[in-house]
Length: 219
Image (cartoon, rainbow, N blue to C red; front, top):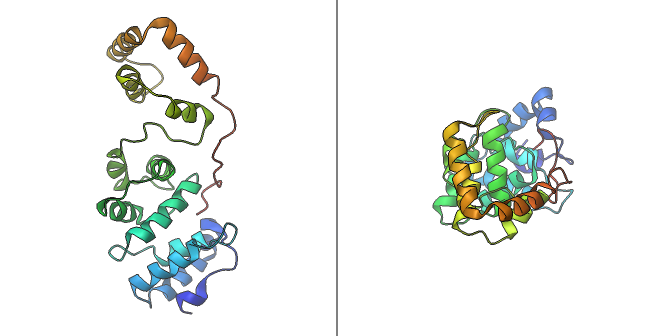
């Protein structure tokens, strides 16, 4: 079955394709076509309106593609990653590199998507993670009210440094050195000002996402 006929009428996600063996059969059929033609077919599948996109099929027929990506195709796949809690595509690092090498700036939502994959993907993305770490902006992932509030505010050098420092925290207890740096930055920001601003941000934690994501480990 050629790739143009292999698309499923309703994308059923990674668990359906891989558990049933349908993914292997689809991938085998797809490899009869060139990598470039499969990328073109995937673009058509991902360009459909909401509810009609076939992201799982698009991922499977391009799962082994490394050198036929175009910036336009990469943008569509990154948009799909932005819609998911975590996105399953074994060549996401090639997709991301294609987009960046072409001089395109990722949208904040795309950045958030690849960051999620690098951190909690269906397997640890050891190739993707170092590439994602080079993306410094936005400082936080949009899509939650508390993060959206911070991203909407004008932050001076001290507050930017404070947030950057906060992102380096690890473990359940901070080190003495980390705490000293945080204390110095809070002092520079002003204790009362910092308390009021941080309280406002933290009051939004736990509210429903402003940018809903498709759930589970679906494509």
